[in-house]
Image (cartoon, rainbow over all chains, first blue to last red; front, side, top):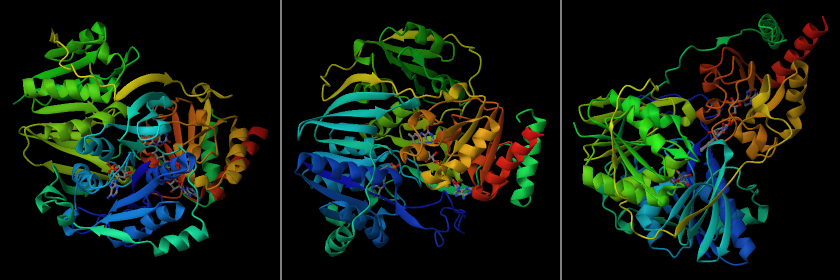
Length: 265
Length: 321
Ligand SMILES: Cc1cc2nc3c(=O)[nH]c(=O)nc-3n(C[C@H](O)[C@H](O)[C@H](O)COP(=O)(O)OP(=O)(O)OC[C@H]3O[C@@H](n4cnc5c(N)ncnc54)[C@H](O)[C@@H]3O)c2cc1C
Ligand SMILES: Nc1ncnc2c1ncn2[C@@H]1O[C@H](COP(=O)(O)O)[C@@H](O)[C@H]1O
């Protein structure tokens, strides 16, 4: 089975302050740490586990991004990926979900594949567009929010469980080739071994531009997007929490007193 | 203004709230609101939708008994080509996310997902959506398109009382192809654990801020002192630190305890959806910009490993007194 995994390098913003930059349309990324998009990490693991289970197959890693994305690609190679492609072009910049899917689809069309894995959702933009859009662009069926994958017949058919609201699983059978958008928690992503990391450092990453993929600059990036970002603003929140000030001793005492007053202690 | 289509979402005999919310939101945009209902023998939903829409397009067919995005896509694209709406609203749900991007590609339509607010500039939507896990709002302008598809986050619009009596128009199923390449098999319920957190009077919600499962005693002791049960964010469940039946949120449980004390939880909307109905919400988080403080009643901005043990101590003292 030939598998492709789409991985995105994203900033970790859960634990850091996010500052809007002077343009109003981007954030200051200079002090943020970056890594693989959370669900993409699970997607990489799923592809590698299927390869191991079947005892055959290849995993090709694809990322659209600048040179810094190599770090994320190499980590996926170190865990068991076989080949890698990176899509880089000025023309790809500023693309919305559909524009990114167009570029990825153009690259994947030139490959042989049974399953294309993506994550369910990018942690930065949160679009959740790529998996279903990619399926349509490639002309193959897709399923998103996938939390179980069972290969019924290699190269032919799979049974997948989609995670719905409330944790309900919807099982369906799907013909291969297909696109699966993987949800977090589907497996336990491994750590790369030292040997894997050393080997991955030597692997070649094929770089493709829009022209290499037969794409016109007007089809991709900001030019090829429907939605134009006008500006970022801090979110509108209702009433902010009353923040209890002081050293841990004091804040803990204040909170305990409030809970007592409310009859909760 | 061209018609506005709103897709009605339902599963196993229940219509999702977001469907009615979208109909109410659409009614304020101007233009004819058409509820599109695909299902098998869901006449009751057609009547409900008619209370909020100018027209209901109802396709009653066994193909739509259980959701299949391919079947939905084919039906919607046929109805859209026939009726030519200018705007289509779909819930940003597990169904909507599986459907909208593929439909947009097929129709060459404009798409913005997971919107949280909507203004119109004439016929053109100006949607707002969040970035970076809710830390920023992003305001979008749209390029000209024949059809705009928006997926709408729950609670973006407010459901109101029904005030219309739209005509229910039954239409033949436009889908004739075989779609066995994607076939529904079954639903499987999540496993039930020892503690039913939907019944707990008090919950201590644990997030990724706890770092490792070996740190769990810190929050366990607090929960014990309070007489609360432990709940968790998805990150904690994915890591295997607490079982799945403790997960609060969109893909977990909806809880409404008297007290929800969120420890090391950022407050992603997928989590907040499941606990915002709690009577008193307290958040302990070292990041002053964590979205959880936007919905909490009380907050402590500090390292949980410093505050929580102190809090446990103080509560024990108060209880002992
Ligand atoms: C389709 C879908 C469904 C989902 N369903 C759910 C769901 O049902 N429930 C759910 O919870 N999530 C759900 N999620 C995931 C959700 O988007 C978030 O990723 C998740 O809620 C994050 O969990 P967290 O807050 O524990 O972790 P993070 O977002 O990583 O936040 C950790 C927080 O801990 C704080 N912290 C770190 N160290 C300390 C310290 N020492 N002291 C104090 N604070 C500290 C940080 O400042 C940060 O705010 C879903 C996502 C998708 C795409
Ligand atoms: N720049 C990118 N490079 C590679 N894969 C991507 C990129 N952007 C998005 N994806 C994939 O598409 C998934 C969903 O992204 P999104 O539609 O942006 O939420 C991600 O989890 C990735 O697997």
